[in-house]
Length: 264
Length: 326
Image (cartoon, rainbow over all chains, first blue to last red; front, side, top):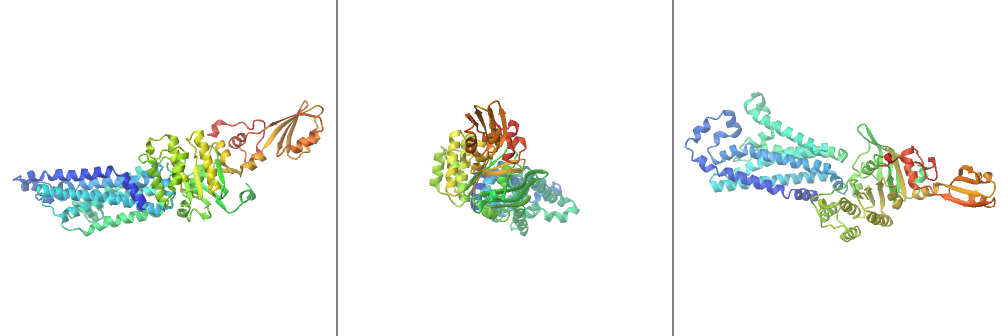
């Protein structure tokens, strides 16, 4: 299992540092805008004019603080989106990508069980997204320290954890779909559709009363509703974490009984 | 295929019972009944689409049979797939490897998954196949890439080697070296099952041959049986009248034709009895015409024959249809 994990991480030896650097840099650059924004005398009245829905979605009403600023600018949409894109592309590439490339046979016709192979790939995906999470936390802390945003380490960690879990759960959807379907395109399609549906539910629930109760089902709500640069780790973060494990466990028996490479 | 032919030795390395495989409506294999003895080289021979790759993937546990049971080294593949896969050295028909890895890194990955490898043996394989393990697989030619696949399949000296079109892309010298490696593997007690649509490859190394066409096993027999069972045409010229009665009394003789003073005879098995029978009847000259083994196999592909003996034997054998040979 660890051999497969190491191999999958080696495959990301160039892309993962690039993604991590880009995330850190984007947070630091965004933080650099804070001093000039903070100096605006009319900032509070300007923010008060935003529609209520936008205030809710992007936490704009709390944008007059450094933490609120980063929440609104990065952690409410852009960073979660980057994590989700990374998770889906990596998740689809691990199993379905290997299968389409014709290399999966060689990894499976070994003493390694199909289940342990899947767990190894899931572990590598998790490690990859966690690395991005660490980059996000580091960027947040660095940006805060450099430009005086006042983001606490706990908040930085909570925000990074929220984004990480969003990336992992959608990555696991892609990985599980790829394991079941055996093709990368459909795996990306399934995971992207799930992400879009979850985001629509999350945002729609803010201004459509009938959807408000269903928001708790959305991973975006579970991960982002408390901040995501929050003072505390919300318990709802457990849901995407457990869902990620559940997805792999559910896909495993189907994957173990499927013909490998029959679609190529 | 008779039971006696398939069960003539010890516990088989590979045994299938009524194995069928479908992909949706497409039938890839039908009622495959096969038994391959341990410590032998068996060739799967057939044109493209015959079901060779499907059969190998079923044996490797990559496909699950739609019906029937696949046993490898005494294990039911459906119930002990991981165990079986640990006992196999496998070369897929479309080996690509990882373009961004060197041959050495790729072999290290496979070796780690298989629980280690004798690197001295890997080095020997690479040297004999003239393979540079430090080059990235993506930069290798088709043939050299195939060598990486061959090394990874052979390096663990697994009890069963499943090799799908193993010499594809190899030059003749390397093919010969590869055949030596297979014979050495067999001599170590390993069982080798290789697929090919090239007769010369199978004829060069196989002890037994399984002939498939359109998902069905047409015949399974030893190469030795196949060779001795072939009928040959013998032309005998006599000084006087052709002794037709004497000739037809000889066991194995069939299809006698007399043209002038020459008797053209098809005979299966040794020709000694025939020659003894006619030597005192003014026999002046004898010409034999070996039936090319290739013609027999091509006949399977094109004539719809289900057994080698059903094929008509002439001096040149059945006419092959190149389009069906692949």
